[in-house]
Picture 1 (cartoon, rainbow, N blue to C red):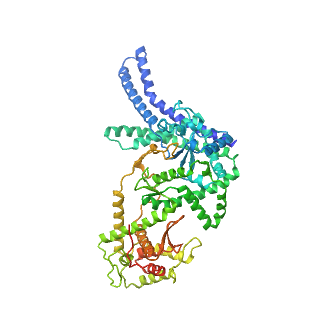
Picture 2: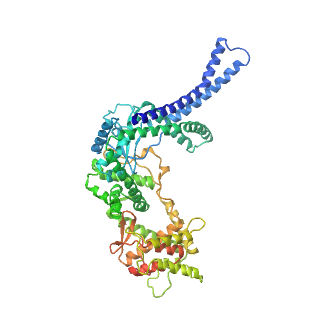
Picture 3: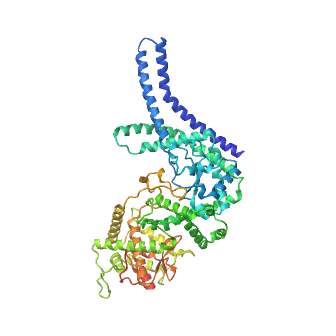
Length: 622
């Protein structure tokens, strides 16, 4: 009963959308109808005398102009290419078990099976209509990816009706088990039933065409005439789109309600459990991209096994978080990635697409854009990142004319040393008693031992957390940015921002490349524009304070590696990590912030003395 109610609601809203289309057509034809009446009436003698002949010709000219404008708008709407999500197409030959699972699921739901399957580097799944002629694959390379999934021969027209494409989030295949994936996909696949209804399909095509036409008219035109014409087309399409928006939204809600109601008969109990895995996979994927993948992308390296990294990150989360202890026990079951013939190549293609979408990297690997395995991540990414940032820090110091320490007891005065950074960032002493007391209180907050309070997965010192929050709130300026320690610190932060901007401007422009094939899966680059990259930036540009803190942290880590035997490491949830005797150092960040924001080096110097780091020794840079 619920299925019929939802489908009926969706059909009624689809008819409302189609009525708007019919009214627009009627408005376009109305002047022509009036002109025909006047011309026929004049020729038959029913309308004669006065100004009727002149009126007839004026209305005829207006009707011709309106019809010409309507034909142009209809042509733009029909030929505009609707937006398509960037995906990695999966041919049936490369994933027969996955196609078999989806078809069996469609049979159980009594709906048409999707025409093809594609993967997206995101934690979501949906159906996507790709029946527009502009989305038709060029023969003969990709024809089997869309039509071959249903055994359709090559002679069939590209404009023939086809079921939508099933887009699956690639992290789901690696983290979820086969049964969980089937339960999650059930309501998605069930949506092919309402999508096959002619009225709903026609309404969707009309709305997608209007949306694509609006995008076309929003593009910068070359000449004033083209801008004027496109402005008029854009006004009409936006008016129609606004009129359809409410009905289209209610139509999609009806389709979703009908699909969800139909899917309740398939693995309902397992679907409740699987939804928990969806949220967990989303959290792990977001953490992996922002903390682990982003530093590698900035260094010109792209992790080639991001989906496999999600499993490692969520396994680490289950080890740290007691609430997730039961999730690790699922790893003994068959993962959904076993449904692929070559999961490694698919993971690599999805990882490259993720780098393209979230960072705007090149479309193909090259000397400056190379894949990196997780085993090589500490040396290829972490170590190179720290030494590159330390080198940039000293270049800016040289540009600012900062001299090396003049202490005669310190050898190797000319090299890049941590002492040079500490001395420059140390705020000059002031006689203010309140500031001195504040520094003493903050040093006491770190504890009397060398390592201080450790903020790790086992817990957080409540007292320290409250003090830090109070300090940050007190030191935030009017612009919302924490106040830096001194003018020299602010100048150094500005210099780092300018230097990084110059390096990014000098980087070569990215270029798109060919998509994947049935033999070698890869993203399809032909559906979207390179000028829009990155489509989904992970983080806003770093502020001067954040850049300075990152560069000082990198310099400290280089000094610890070169003088105290520390090593670079990878934390699956936090990204680059400094390993001291095989244990991650988790208490460095607050001490660096104290130096940057307050100009107080004592907490950091205590940390360095405890680990045996020698700030006066030069470090190796890139």
